[in-house]
Image 1: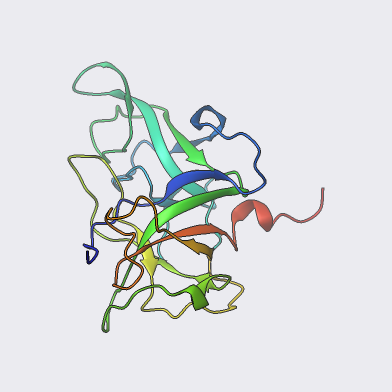
Image 2: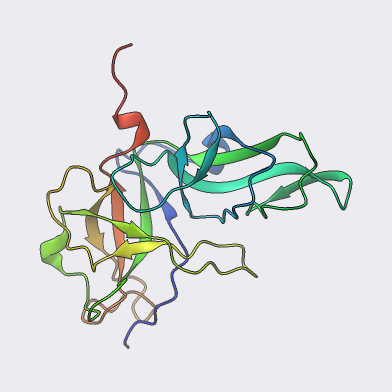
Length: 203
């Protein structure tokens, strides 16, 4: 059955070295209280020069990790809210917005492929081992999930600045969306290639 383009961002599949990973191991960062950008679970995020985090546009900047939720004091509810997404509104003035980010450079992710232009085609076995670019699609707002995907309109290559490396094509469970390797919009397993913590120098 042909795949349907319905990206849900980057979904952790575990560490490639086989070590245990769980959501309570995510890094803790901050979003500036006045930030009006929306962040959804599965989005790619970046460390800004201000020390806060935000969403990342495709390019050569190393990502910090994958946004996995946040907590903040809601101005309307006057209470602490824990959410898979950051609304970009409703947070109290001068409040602390704590963000949770999958920043472990050893974690791999399942993600759907897509095309930002051109004629869509499937990710192929020949792309395994190649580096790939992403794009920010349309979020699934009711589910509070990202719309990010691997953008095959940018041909996977050995380009060192591409943020992800394709490790495998998803084939299980058979019949599930994204597991048809003969049609466009199939899912791939990706590892980090160019990531914030792999760029550290010195001690």
